[in-house]
Amino acid sequence: MRRNFRKMPQGWLQGGDSKIPLEPFSSAFLELFFLYRIQEIFKTKREETTMATKTSMKILLIMLTLIGLASFLSLPAVAAPKWPIPEGIKTIEVNGYDMAYQEAGSGIPFVLIHGSLVDYRTWETQVSEFSKAYRTIAVSLRHHYPEKWNGVGDDFSVAQHASDVAALIKKLNLGKVHLLGHSRGGPIALTVASLYPELIRTLILEDANMESIMPETPEKEKRMADTKARGDRVRANLAAGEPEKAAQEWLDSYGGAGTWEKIPAKWKQIIIDNIGTATDSGERGEVSCADIQKFSFPILLLTGERSPKLYGEMITVLRQCKPDIPAPLIVPKGTHAMHLANPVFFNEAVLEFLTSTTAGERIEYRAKHCNVGTKFEAVEVGDEPGHVIAVTEAKGIGVRIEGAPGGPYKLDIKGTGDYRSDGTGTNQGYGKATYPDGSFYYFKWSDGTVKAGHAYGTSVYFGGTGRFKGMTGGEKFDCILLGDRFVCDVDAWIELP
Image: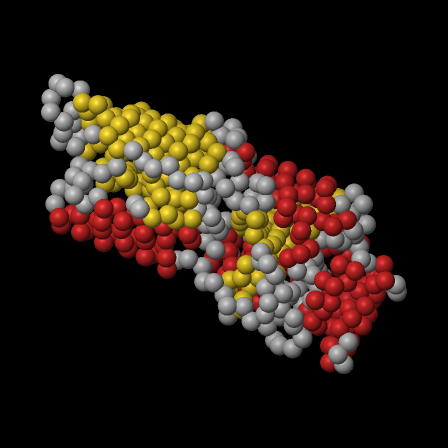
């Protein structure tokens, strides 16, 4: 028996006589492709399968169809935005709102929460760097750009924004994330961590505004009153149709007269785009010391060398609540927006922290593997009818469906097998799993067993590159064999160095 698989142009998957575009290489696409591919396998390979009975075949088809349907139903809802969305920006419906976000990279998710009067664009330098190692998601909070909000409404609060961020994490099936909050994004991150600790891998606070844990003093009362007065002036200017005047007065009230004139035109426009959010009342959530004392994940505190004194005082109170939180890292020449003032130092510090927290981490997940093309060559041994030695080359795709997120990934597999006419046999081989960011690792198995239409065994992972460099790992696999096609359930683990 000799079968050859047709080579397709790069960027395409082969499914029978059809071509399916490989880009975008998304989990949503691949999950739907699995459903299509499994149905096609049963359609085209039914006569070749060695399944015991028609009944078992029907049961298996129903099970696999349900798996595909469950995957389809679990895909995040795609929002129909009520305002123009910039090219390359995604949206998702959370709590009845079309939330915009920028996404890049793959791997462990890293969610960035901006501060006041800005949006996802404040993280431009960070997204380009962080996405080299992480699936980086920079959100635009409710009523921030690209929405042009007029400041009217009662759904602009730390609690609402925290609920939205948590809903996004859940709807995108991100699992545990690294979470970074800047300024007003700080109490939002703290609230998410307090209410949904199961979503947090690490917490990073960049000059977080933590008024909720500050003692009640005349100084605090004045700060709150000043913030409310600024919001009232912004509201009046917006009502008069003067958004630029509202933005100028707001910024000058913080930085002193003339601050507005000193900033680049790009940032003037970003502030004007978000000026409606300056009607904020100044409330900063309800996280307490008791809540912070329950945190059990790594925390990084960042403040700038030139940050306002108030943020240092807030960090002091935070560390009094939980003394085992490490002292803050001071960003040289850093202002309150230190990720903009000194992005090189900031980015390196954050990445070093993330690397240190994942050292020795064990990642466990369950995945589905499916081949999309196979080359199969067999030679009869001659000692008994149907006894063959075979060489197989396969190309496939894998999607993690439970546990730690990551991928999807491409599979290249080569193996040999010794097979009998009764459908039993053994096999061994090796392969390569390649992720969208270019990181990959090899795997090999030597104990494959074939019986009753299944191939099962264990593989060892080795030779990782990129984010898998120095890793160890392995998997248990159970594959349904359908002619020269297979669909596998894989339970895997990876341990980082």
